[in-house]
Amino acid sequence: MYQKTKIILAILLSFSFTQAKDMQEWLRPSEIPQPKNNKLTPQRIELGKLLYFDVRLSSSEKISCATCHHPKHGWSDEIATPKAIGHEGAVGSRNSPVILNTAYQNRQFWDGRAKTLEEQTLKPIEEGVEMNMPLSILIPKLNAIDGYVKLFDIAYPKEGLNKTTLAKALASFGRTVVSTIAPFDNYIMGDKNAISKKAKRGFKLFKTKAHCIDCHEKFNFSDGSFHNIGLNDGELHGKELGRYVVKPRASWYGVMKTPTLRDVTKSAPYFHDGSVQTLVEASSICANGGRYKYNVKNKSTYIKDRGLSRQEIDDLVTFLHTLTGPDMKLKIPTKFPQ
Amino acid sequence: MKAIIYFLLITISINIQAQEHVVDQKNKTFLPSTMKLEVGDTIRFKNSDPFAHNAYADDKANEFDVGMQFPNKDKVIKMKKAGKFNVECAIHPNMLIEVEVVE
View 1 (cartoon, each protein chain N blue to C red):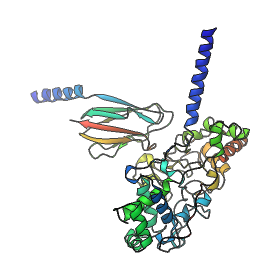
View 2 (view 1 turned 90 degrees about the horizontal axis):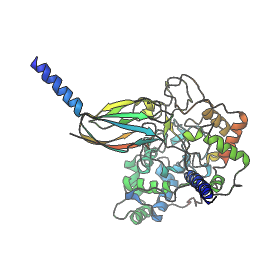
View 3 (view 1 turned 180 degrees about the horizontal axis):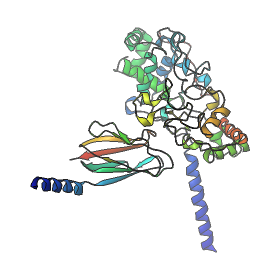
View 4 (view 1 turned 120 degrees about the vertical axis):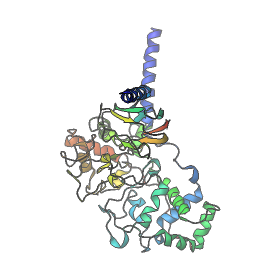
Protein backbone atom coordinates (compact mmCIF):
# COMPACT_ATOMS: atom_id res chain seq x y z
CA MET A 1 0.00 0.00 0.00
CA TYR A 2 2.82 2.35 1.05
CA GLN A 3 4.69 1.51 -2.13
CA LYS A 4 1.59 2.21 -4.25
CA THR A 5 1.07 5.60 -2.56
CA LYS A 6 4.71 6.49 -3.23
CA ILE A 7 4.31 5.68 -6.92
CA ILE A 8 1.09 7.71 -7.24
CA LEU A 9 2.73 10.65 -5.44
CA ALA A 10 5.75 10.46 -7.71
CA ILE A 11 3.51 10.48 -10.80
CA LEU A 12 1.51 13.42 -9.48
CA LEU A 13 4.65 15.37 -8.57
CA SER A 14 6.22 14.70 -11.93
CA PHE A 15 2.99 15.77 -13.66
CA SER A 16 2.72 19.00 -11.67
CA PHE A 17 6.43 19.72 -12.23
CA THR A 18 6.04 19.25 -15.99
CA GLN A 19 2.90 21.37 -15.96
CA ALA A 20 4.63 24.10 -13.93
CA LYS A 21 7.56 24.06 -16.35
CA ASP A 22 5.18 24.29 -19.31
CA MET A 23 3.39 27.20 -17.67
CA GLN A 24 6.65 28.94 -16.78
CA GLU A 25 7.57 29.51 -20.41
CA TRP A 26 4.53 31.81 -20.77
CA LEU A 27 5.79 34.18 -18.10
CA ARG A 28 8.02 37.16 -18.80
CA PRO A 29 11.67 36.48 -17.97
CA SER A 30 12.74 38.28 -14.80
CA GLU A 31 15.43 40.32 -16.56
CA ILE A 32 15.42 42.39 -19.72
CA PRO A 33 18.18 41.19 -22.09
CA GLN A 34 20.79 43.89 -22.66
CA PRO A 35 24.16 43.99 -24.43
CA LYS A 36 27.40 44.21 -22.43
CA ASN A 37 28.35 47.52 -24.02
CA ASN A 38 25.02 49.19 -23.29
CA LYS A 39 23.75 48.10 -19.90
CA LEU A 40 20.55 49.75 -18.78
CA THR A 41 20.87 52.65 -16.37
CA PRO A 42 18.17 55.14 -15.30
CA GLN A 43 20.11 57.95 -17.00
CA ARG A 44 20.33 56.11 -20.31
CA ILE A 45 16.66 55.15 -20.23
CA GLU A 46 15.56 58.70 -19.40
CA LEU A 47 17.76 60.17 -22.13
CA GLY A 48 16.44 57.63 -24.63
CA LYS A 49 12.88 58.52 -23.67
CA LEU A 50 13.47 62.23 -24.31
CA LEU A 51 14.95 61.47 -27.72
CA TYR A 52 12.14 59.05 -28.53
CA PHE A 53 9.47 61.69 -28.08
CA ASP A 54 11.47 64.64 -29.47
CA VAL A 55 10.21 65.80 -32.88
CA ARG A 56 13.49 67.63 -33.49
CA LEU A 57 14.92 64.27 -34.55
CA SER A 58 12.95 64.59 -37.81
CA SER A 59 13.74 67.03 -40.60
CA SER A 60 10.20 68.47 -40.51
CA GLU A 61 10.30 68.73 -36.69
CA LYS A 62 6.81 67.23 -36.72
CA ILE A 63 7.59 63.53 -36.35
CA SER A 64 9.13 61.63 -33.47
CA CYS A 65 9.67 57.90 -33.02
CA ALA A 66 6.42 57.93 -31.06
CA THR A 67 4.43 59.10 -34.09
CA CYS A 68 4.55 55.58 -35.53
CA HIS A 69 5.11 53.69 -32.27
CA HIS A 70 2.91 55.39 -29.72
CA PRO A 71 2.28 54.11 -26.19
CA LYS A 72 -1.37 55.11 -26.40
CA HIS A 73 -1.92 52.77 -29.31
CA GLY A 74 -0.13 49.62 -28.29
CA TRP A 75 3.19 51.10 -29.45
CA SER A 76 1.95 51.20 -33.03
CA ASP A 77 0.82 54.19 -35.14
CA GLU A 78 -0.50 57.08 -33.08
CA ILE A 79 -3.33 57.36 -35.60
CA ALA A 80 -4.37 53.88 -36.70
CA THR A 81 -3.50 53.46 -40.36
CA PRO A 82 -2.72 50.42 -42.54
CA LYS A 83 0.59 51.84 -43.73
CA ALA A 84 2.90 54.09 -41.75
CA ILE A 85 2.66 57.79 -42.58
CA GLY A 86 5.92 59.65 -42.36
CA HIS A 87 7.70 62.73 -43.66
CA GLU A 88 5.33 65.28 -45.22
CA GLY A 89 2.58 62.66 -45.41
CA ALA A 90 4.63 60.09 -47.29
CA VAL A 91 3.05 56.64 -47.03
CA GLY A 92 5.41 53.80 -46.17
CA SER A 93 5.24 50.30 -47.60
CA ARG A 94 4.30 48.55 -44.34
CA ASN A 95 2.14 48.75 -41.26
CA SER A 96 4.16 50.16 -38.34
CA PRO A 97 5.27 47.20 -36.23
CA VAL A 98 4.61 47.43 -32.51
CA ILE A 99 7.81 47.94 -30.53
CA LEU A 100 6.57 46.15 -27.43
CA ASN A 101 9.03 43.53 -26.11
CA THR A 102 11.58 44.11 -28.86
CA ALA A 103 14.26 43.56 -26.21
CA TYR A 104 13.39 39.88 -26.40
CA GLN A 105 13.73 39.63 -30.19
CA ASN A 106 16.95 38.82 -31.95
CA ARG A 107 15.87 40.36 -35.26
CA GLN A 108 14.25 43.78 -35.68
CA PHE A 109 11.87 45.15 -38.36
CA TRP A 110 9.24 43.10 -40.18
CA ASP A 111 12.00 41.73 -42.41
CA GLY A 112 14.56 41.27 -39.63
CA ARG A 113 17.18 43.41 -41.36
CA ALA A 114 18.65 44.60 -38.05
CA LYS A 115 20.00 42.23 -35.44
CA THR A 116 20.07 44.62 -32.50
CA LEU A 117 18.02 47.55 -31.28
CA GLU A 118 21.15 49.71 -31.57
CA GLU A 119 21.36 48.79 -35.26
CA GLN A 120 17.63 49.23 -35.81
CA THR A 121 16.99 52.49 -34.08
CA LEU A 122 18.78 54.91 -36.41
CA LYS A 123 17.33 53.59 -39.66
CA PRO A 124 13.84 55.18 -39.40
CA ILE A 125 15.46 58.52 -38.54
CA GLU A 126 17.36 58.56 -41.82
CA GLU A 127 14.68 56.89 -43.95
CA GLY A 128 13.26 59.38 -46.47
CA VAL A 129 9.62 58.36 -46.04
CA GLU A 130 9.90 58.26 -42.26
CA MET A 131 11.79 60.96 -40.35
CA ASN A 132 13.97 61.97 -43.27
CA MET A 133 16.81 63.24 -41.11
CA PRO A 134 20.38 62.47 -42.24
CA LEU A 135 22.60 61.71 -39.27
CA SER A 136 25.20 64.06 -40.74
CA ILE A 137 22.75 66.86 -39.93
CA LEU A 138 21.17 65.44 -36.79
CA ILE A 139 24.36 64.81 -34.79
CA PRO A 140 25.65 68.43 -35.08
CA LYS A 141 22.09 69.63 -34.40
CA LEU A 142 21.91 67.66 -31.14
CA ASN A 143 25.45 68.73 -30.21
CA ALA A 144 24.26 72.32 -30.42
CA ILE A 145 21.66 71.65 -27.71
CA ASP A 146 23.50 72.05 -24.39
CA GLY A 147 20.87 70.13 -22.46
CA TYR A 148 21.42 67.02 -24.60
CA VAL A 149 25.22 67.32 -24.49
CA LYS A 150 25.06 67.28 -20.67
CA LEU A 151 22.66 64.34 -20.55
CA PHE A 152 24.80 62.30 -22.96
CA ASP A 153 27.85 63.08 -20.84
CA ILE A 154 26.07 61.76 -17.75
CA ALA A 155 24.63 58.68 -19.49
CA TYR A 156 27.71 57.86 -21.58
CA PRO A 157 30.71 59.53 -19.91
CA LYS A 158 33.60 60.26 -22.29
CA GLU A 159 31.78 58.64 -25.22
CA GLY A 160 30.45 61.90 -26.64
CA LEU A 161 27.25 62.64 -28.50
CA ASN A 162 27.54 60.76 -31.75
CA LYS A 163 25.55 58.26 -33.77
CA THR A 164 26.76 55.37 -31.61
CA THR A 165 25.62 56.92 -28.34
CA LEU A 166 22.43 58.20 -29.96
CA ALA A 167 21.63 54.62 -31.01
CA LYS A 168 22.54 53.32 -27.56
CA ALA A 169 20.29 55.81 -25.77
CA LEU A 170 17.29 55.14 -28.01
CA ALA A 171 17.84 51.39 -27.72
CA SER A 172 17.99 51.68 -23.93
CA PHE A 173 14.56 53.25 -23.81
CA GLY A 174 13.26 50.76 -26.38
CA ARG A 175 14.34 47.85 -24.16
CA THR A 176 12.19 49.10 -21.31
CA VAL A 177 9.04 49.00 -23.43
CA VAL A 178 7.79 45.68 -22.10
CA SER A 179 4.35 44.24 -21.62
CA THR A 180 2.58 44.55 -18.28
CA ILE A 181 0.80 41.83 -16.33
CA ALA A 182 -2.26 40.78 -18.33
CA PRO A 183 -5.18 38.60 -17.13
CA PHE A 184 -3.51 35.67 -18.89
CA ASP A 185 -0.39 36.08 -16.72
CA ASN A 186 -2.49 36.02 -13.57
CA TYR A 187 -4.12 32.85 -14.85
CA ILE A 188 -0.74 31.25 -15.52
CA MET A 189 0.44 32.30 -12.06
CA GLY A 190 -2.41 30.41 -10.47
CA ASP A 191 -5.52 32.62 -10.43
CA LYS A 192 -7.89 30.23 -12.17
CA ASN A 193 -10.62 32.87 -12.30
CA ALA A 194 -8.44 35.47 -14.04
CA ILE A 195 -9.82 34.50 -17.43
CA SER A 196 -13.24 33.25 -18.48
CA LYS A 197 -14.19 29.70 -19.45
CA LYS A 198 -14.50 30.87 -23.01
CA ALA A 199 -10.95 32.25 -22.92
CA LYS A 200 -9.70 28.96 -21.45
CA ARG A 201 -11.31 27.14 -24.38
CA GLY A 202 -9.59 29.62 -26.66
CA PHE A 203 -6.20 28.96 -25.01
CA LYS A 204 -6.68 25.24 -25.50
CA LEU A 205 -7.51 25.76 -29.16
CA PHE A 206 -4.53 28.09 -29.46
CA LYS A 207 -2.21 25.28 -28.35
CA THR A 208 -3.91 22.40 -30.16
CA LYS A 209 -6.36 22.43 -33.05
CA ALA A 210 -5.69 25.97 -34.25
CA HIS A 211 -1.88 25.55 -34.07
CA CYS A 212 -1.38 29.26 -33.29
CA ILE A 213 1.38 28.17 -30.91
CA ASP A 214 3.48 26.98 -33.85
CA CYS A 215 4.43 30.62 -34.47
CA HIS A 216 3.11 32.53 -31.45
CA GLU A 217 4.95 30.77 -28.67
CA LYS A 218 6.23 31.44 -25.16
CA PHE A 219 5.92 34.62 -23.13
CA ASN A 220 6.15 37.01 -26.07
CA PHE A 221 3.77 34.98 -28.20
CA SER A 222 6.27 35.04 -31.05
CA ASP A 223 8.86 32.53 -32.23
CA GLY A 224 10.96 35.43 -33.56
CA SER A 225 10.85 33.64 -36.90
CA PHE A 226 9.79 34.50 -40.43
CA HIS A 227 6.81 33.11 -42.30
CA ASN A 228 4.78 33.69 -45.42
CA ILE A 229 1.21 33.26 -44.21
CA GLY A 230 -0.44 33.54 -47.62
CA LEU A 231 -1.77 37.08 -47.57
CA ASN A 232 -1.02 37.31 -51.28
CA ASP A 233 -1.24 34.72 -54.00
CA GLY A 234 1.41 33.29 -56.31
CA GLU A 235 4.39 35.42 -57.24
CA LEU A 236 4.66 38.70 -55.39
CA HIS A 237 5.15 40.94 -58.42
CA GLY A 238 5.21 44.49 -57.20
CA LYS A 239 4.22 43.41 -53.70
CA GLU A 240 6.06 42.99 -50.45
CA LEU A 241 8.92 40.52 -50.80
CA GLY A 242 9.56 40.46 -47.06
CA ARG A 243 12.91 39.21 -45.84
CA TYR A 244 13.82 38.39 -49.44
CA VAL A 245 14.83 42.05 -49.87
CA VAL A 246 17.54 41.56 -47.22
CA LYS A 247 19.00 38.74 -49.29
CA PRO A 248 17.32 36.87 -52.15
CA ARG A 249 17.25 33.54 -50.35
CA ALA A 250 14.48 31.25 -51.65
CA SER A 251 13.24 30.50 -48.14
CA TRP A 252 12.90 34.25 -47.45
CA TYR A 253 10.48 34.89 -50.30
CA GLY A 254 7.55 36.88 -48.94
CA VAL A 255 8.26 36.04 -45.29
CA MET A 256 7.75 38.46 -42.41
CA LYS A 257 8.57 38.24 -38.73
CA THR A 258 5.97 36.78 -36.39
CA PRO A 259 4.60 39.72 -34.39
CA THR A 260 3.99 39.53 -30.66
CA LEU A 261 0.40 39.02 -29.54
CA ARG A 262 0.93 40.88 -26.27
CA ASP A 263 -1.47 43.86 -26.08
CA VAL A 264 -2.70 42.84 -29.52
CA THR A 265 -6.13 44.40 -28.96
CA LYS A 266 -4.49 47.85 -28.91
CA SER A 267 -2.69 47.84 -32.22
CA ALA A 268 -5.15 47.27 -35.10
CA PRO A 269 -4.91 47.11 -38.07
CA TYR A 270 -3.00 43.85 -38.32
CA PHE A 271 -0.34 42.12 -40.42
CA HIS A 272 2.60 43.73 -42.18
CA ASP A 273 0.31 45.30 -44.76
CA GLY A 274 -2.29 46.51 -42.26
CA SER A 275 -4.93 44.84 -44.40
CA VAL A 276 -7.00 43.42 -41.55
CA GLN A 277 -8.99 45.42 -39.03
CA THR A 278 -10.21 42.81 -36.59
CA LEU A 279 -8.79 39.92 -34.61
CA VAL A 280 -11.62 37.71 -35.85
CA GLU A 281 -10.48 38.19 -39.43
CA ALA A 282 -6.79 37.89 -38.53
CA SER A 283 -7.37 34.65 -36.61
CA SER A 284 -9.52 33.24 -39.40
CA ILE A 285 -6.80 33.92 -41.98
CA CYS A 286 -4.04 32.33 -39.91
CA ALA A 287 -5.97 29.32 -38.62
CA ASN A 288 -7.91 28.54 -41.76
CA GLY A 289 -5.09 28.30 -44.28
CA GLY A 290 -4.21 31.88 -45.18
CA ARG A 291 -6.08 34.42 -47.26
CA TYR A 292 -4.90 32.51 -50.31
CA LYS A 293 -4.88 28.78 -49.77
CA TYR A 294 -3.23 27.59 -52.97
CA ASN A 295 -0.44 28.60 -55.32
CA VAL A 296 1.32 30.78 -52.78
CA LYS A 297 5.03 30.69 -53.45
CA ASN A 298 7.01 29.76 -50.31
CA LYS A 299 3.95 29.62 -48.08
CA SER A 300 4.72 28.49 -44.53
CA THR A 301 4.08 24.85 -43.76
CA TYR A 302 2.47 26.03 -40.52
CA ILE A 303 -0.39 27.66 -42.37
CA LYS A 304 -3.04 25.05 -43.02
CA ASP A 305 -6.81 24.96 -42.92
CA ARG A 306 -7.46 23.81 -39.35
CA GLY A 307 -11.20 23.67 -39.90
CA LEU A 308 -12.15 26.04 -37.11
CA SER A 309 -15.81 26.90 -36.65
CA ARG A 310 -17.02 30.45 -36.05
CA GLN A 311 -17.56 29.56 -32.40
CA GLU A 312 -13.97 28.35 -32.12
CA ILE A 313 -12.62 31.51 -33.74
CA ASP A 314 -14.70 33.46 -31.26
CA ASP A 315 -13.16 31.50 -28.37
CA LEU A 316 -9.69 32.15 -29.77
CA VAL A 317 -10.30 35.88 -29.99
CA THR A 318 -11.67 35.93 -26.44
CA PHE A 319 -8.41 34.34 -25.37
CA LEU A 320 -6.36 36.91 -27.31
CA HIS A 321 -8.11 39.65 -25.34
CA THR A 322 -6.64 38.20 -22.12
CA LEU A 323 -3.13 39.02 -23.40
CA THR A 324 -3.75 42.74 -23.04
CA GLY A 325 -2.55 44.32 -19.83
CA PRO A 326 -2.83 47.84 -18.51
CA ASP A 327 -0.72 50.51 -20.20
CA MET A 328 2.88 50.66 -19.04
CA LYS A 329 3.46 53.39 -16.47
CA LEU A 330 5.13 56.12 -18.43
CA LYS A 331 5.32 59.87 -18.14
CA ILE A 332 5.41 61.20 -21.68
CA PRO A 333 7.81 64.14 -21.73
CA THR A 334 6.42 67.55 -22.60
CA LYS A 335 9.61 69.52 -22.01
CA PHE A 336 12.79 68.75 -23.87
CA PRO A 337 16.45 69.70 -23.39
CA GLN A 338 17.38 73.15 -24.66
CA MET B 1 47.22 3.74 -66.56
CA LYS B 2 49.37 4.34 -63.47
CA ALA B 3 48.08 7.86 -63.24
CA ILE B 4 44.49 6.60 -63.23
CA ILE B 5 45.27 4.10 -60.47
CA TYR B 6 46.98 6.77 -58.39
CA PHE B 7 44.04 9.10 -58.92
CA LEU B 8 41.58 6.41 -57.83
CA LEU B 9 43.66 5.54 -54.79
CA ILE B 10 43.87 9.17 -53.71
CA THR B 11 40.13 9.65 -54.23
CA ILE B 12 39.32 6.50 -52.25
CA SER B 13 41.68 7.52 -49.45
CA ILE B 14 40.08 10.99 -49.23
CA ASN B 15 36.64 9.42 -49.12
CA ILE B 16 37.72 7.02 -46.38
CA GLN B 17 39.04 9.89 -44.29
CA ALA B 18 36.02 12.16 -44.74
CA GLN B 19 33.34 11.72 -42.12
CA GLU B 20 29.64 12.36 -42.16
CA HIS B 21 28.24 14.25 -39.17
CA VAL B 22 24.55 14.28 -38.46
CA VAL B 23 22.67 17.37 -37.34
CA ASP B 24 19.06 16.97 -36.34
CA GLN B 25 16.55 19.79 -36.33
CA LYS B 26 14.14 19.12 -33.51
CA ASN B 27 11.95 21.41 -31.40
CA LYS B 28 13.36 24.37 -33.35
CA THR B 29 16.89 23.51 -32.23
CA PHE B 30 19.97 22.27 -34.06
CA LEU B 31 21.48 19.25 -32.34
CA PRO B 32 24.38 19.47 -31.76
CA SER B 33 24.88 23.22 -31.44
CA THR B 34 28.68 23.18 -31.84
CA MET B 35 30.73 21.14 -34.28
CA LYS B 36 34.37 20.62 -35.13
CA LEU B 37 34.93 19.14 -38.57
CA GLU B 38 37.69 18.54 -41.07
CA VAL B 39 37.83 19.80 -44.61
CA GLY B 40 36.01 17.26 -46.79
CA ASP B 41 33.66 16.15 -44.02
CA THR B 42 29.96 16.37 -44.63
CA ILE B 43 27.01 17.39 -42.51
CA ARG B 44 23.77 15.52 -42.99
CA PHE B 45 20.92 17.81 -41.91
CA LYS B 46 17.84 15.92 -40.74
CA ASN B 47 14.47 17.43 -39.93
CA SER B 48 12.56 15.68 -37.15
CA ASP B 49 10.11 18.55 -36.68
CA PRO B 50 6.69 18.38 -38.31
CA PHE B 51 7.37 21.60 -40.24
CA ALA B 52 9.94 22.98 -42.67
CA HIS B 53 13.40 24.14 -41.68
CA ASN B 54 16.45 25.48 -43.43
CA ALA B 55 20.19 25.63 -42.86
CA TYR B 56 22.52 28.17 -44.36
CA ALA B 57 25.93 29.73 -43.81
CA ASP B 58 27.00 33.08 -45.18
CA ASP B 59 30.67 32.29 -44.61
CA LYS B 60 32.73 33.07 -47.72
CA ALA B 61 34.72 29.83 -47.59
CA ASN B 62 31.82 27.52 -46.87
CA GLU B 63 28.75 29.35 -48.11
CA PHE B 64 25.68 27.15 -48.55
CA ASP B 65 21.92 27.17 -48.31
CA VAL B 66 19.94 23.92 -48.26
CA GLY B 67 16.73 25.72 -49.26
CA MET B 68 13.36 24.71 -47.86
CA GLN B 69 13.84 21.47 -45.96
CA PHE B 70 10.58 19.63 -45.37
CA PRO B 71 10.01 17.13 -42.53
CA ASN B 72 11.90 13.84 -42.75
CA LYS B 73 13.98 15.03 -45.70
CA ASP B 74 17.77 15.03 -45.46
CA LYS B 75 20.23 17.47 -46.97
CA VAL B 76 23.98 16.86 -47.16
CA ILE B 77 26.58 19.62 -47.31
CA LYS B 78 30.34 19.19 -47.79
CA MET B 79 32.81 21.39 -45.92
CA LYS B 80 35.15 22.87 -48.51
CA LYS B 81 37.62 25.02 -46.60
CA ALA B 82 38.92 25.64 -43.09
CA GLY B 83 37.25 28.35 -41.03
CA LYS B 84 34.86 29.24 -38.26
CA PHE B 85 31.29 30.21 -39.02
CA ASN B 86 27.70 29.96 -37.89
CA VAL B 87 24.95 27.92 -39.47
CA GLU B 88 21.45 29.33 -39.04
CA CYS B 89 17.95 28.38 -40.01
CA ALA B 90 16.54 31.03 -42.34
CA ILE B 91 13.05 30.47 -40.97
CA HIS B 92 13.92 30.28 -37.26
CA PRO B 93 16.80 32.66 -36.53
CA ASN B 94 17.06 31.46 -32.94
CA MET B 95 18.50 28.21 -34.30
CA LEU B 96 22.29 28.31 -34.51
CA ILE B 97 25.30 25.99 -34.83
CA GLU B 98 28.86 27.18 -34.25
CA VAL B 99 31.02 25.30 -36.74
CA GLU B 100 34.79 25.04 -36.90
CA VAL B 101 36.37 23.40 -39.94
CA VAL B 102 40.04 22.49 -39.71
CA GLU B 103 42.56 21.16 -42.26
